[in-house]
Image (cartoon, rainbow, N blue to C red; front, side):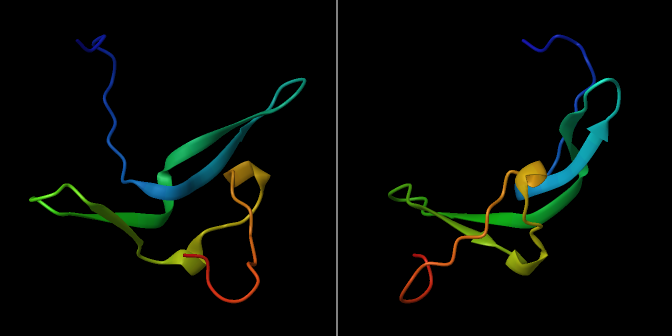
Length: 79
């Protein structure tokens, strides 16, 4: 049962925009209104196999505030 608070839907994405909150320290949270790397899911209705696809991988920002890291594998693309 939901607690009655506001409900928000957002797309599945690789990451979301960072939102920094000030104060004596700072707190970084995700801004779900700014999605990067929208994910599409393909599901086999017979066996349940799931395949994910990122619609625009070059739009995904890299950095700790986005919880992303650029990995350059040796010998070709990561699969």
